[in-house]
Figure (tube, helix red, strand yellow):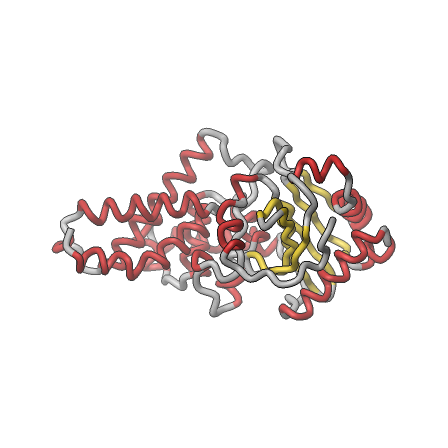
Amino acid sequence: MDSAAVDQFEAGRGRLASLAYRLLGSAADAEDAVQDTFLRWQAADRERIEVPEAWLTKVATNLCLDRLRSAQARHERTAGAWLPEPLLDGDPMLGPADTFEQRESVTLAVLTLLERLSPAERAVYVLREAFSYSHAEIAAILDITESASQQHAHRARTRVAAERSRGGAADPASARRVVEEFLAAATSGRTDRLVALLTDDVTAVSDGAGLARRLLRYRSRERVASFVRAGFKPTPAKRRLAGGTLAMHLARVNGTPAVVAVVEGRVVGTVAFEVSDGKVASLYGIAATDRLARLDGAWQRHEPGVPVIDAW
C-alpha cells in the first residue's frame, strides 16, 4: 500500500475509532474494528472507491454490527451483565463533543441504555445523533431504506428518552461540587445528607468490584444510599482486594464527573456520576480490571493533582 493511501486512512482513524467505541462500548473492541477496517482498505481496489470516507464508515459500521450480533448470539452481552468501558476525558476515542447530542451519546448512562437497542437501532442512533448523518447516508451505510432508517431512529430515540427524563444537566463546576458533597457524605456516615443529594428516581449500577456475575442495580434513594455507604466504607478486606491503600481523585469520565480510585498510581476503580438539577441522578461503579486498562493508561499520562481522599 502506498503512503498516500495509508495517510488517507490515518486522517480518518480517530473518527472511525470514536464511531466504533460508541457502537461497541469497548475501546479494545473499537481498536480491533478499526484495524480490521484498515485491512479491508488495504485489500480494496481503492481506485474504484469514489468517496473514501463514506466507504470506510460503511465498512467500520458493519464490522461493529457483526461484532454486536455475534456477541449477542453467544450471550456475551446479555442485558444486565455488561457495562461500557470508561474513558478519561481528553481521550480522542470520545470523539466529537460540539453538540449536546454528541456529548450525551458517549456518557456511560447512554452507552448503557444503547445495550437495550437492537444493533440496527444502535447504529442508526449513533450515526444520526453523534455524527449527524442524514437518513439517506445512513441507509447507504447499512443497506436499508431511508424509511427503515427513520423508523429505527424513532424507536431508538423513544427508548432512550423514556429512560432519560432528567432535568437540566449541570455545568462541570456545579456537577463537581455536587460530587464533592456526595463523597463527603458517603465517607462520613451522614446518611441523611447522602439521601438528600439523590434524585427521587436515582439509580446505581455496579459490577461488584469486578467480581459479580451480573451487574448490581439499586433504585430508590434509601437503597442507593445504603449501597453507597457500604461501598465507600473502608475495610482491611477492601484494601487487600484493591492491592493497598487507595487515594481517591475527582476527574471526568465519559464527559461526566467521576471518582477515580488509585493505588500507587494504578487505577483500580471508578464511579461515574450523572448530575441533574443539583442532585445525583445515577452512578456507575466499574472495577473490573479488563474494563479499566485504557483509563489506567491515560491516567499514567495525566496530572491528577491532589486527591480528595489521600488514604482510604
